[in-house]
Image (cartoon, one colour):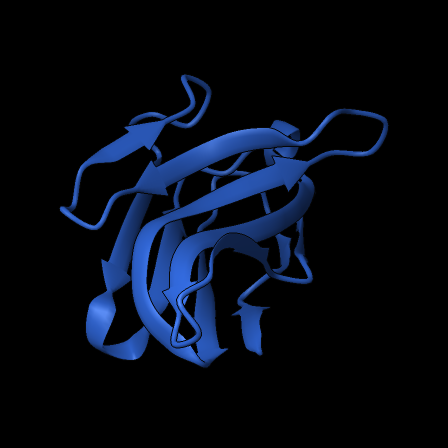
Length: 120
């Protein structure tokens, strides 16, 4: 059993910052890619950022230069530092990890989502 638990969402004013965290626990053997998606009301879920096991990162054009994804392999945790937030960043943010369990099963796992609201 693998669980991903997110934290760090909330209400922030335009121009502000938030840091999201997502920690994985359970029968984990190794984690490959870690990423963040978001889904705004009435819109499809979209990729925000991804980081590979080697540390290569990729970002959606809309967040480049403002968001930074990082990971702590010892803690099985991925972070998303979000700066210069604007109302268009308002969404539910979901973390995802592609990992192998100790039962030798590889799969994508998702967190429950954390809400980010950017408003004055």
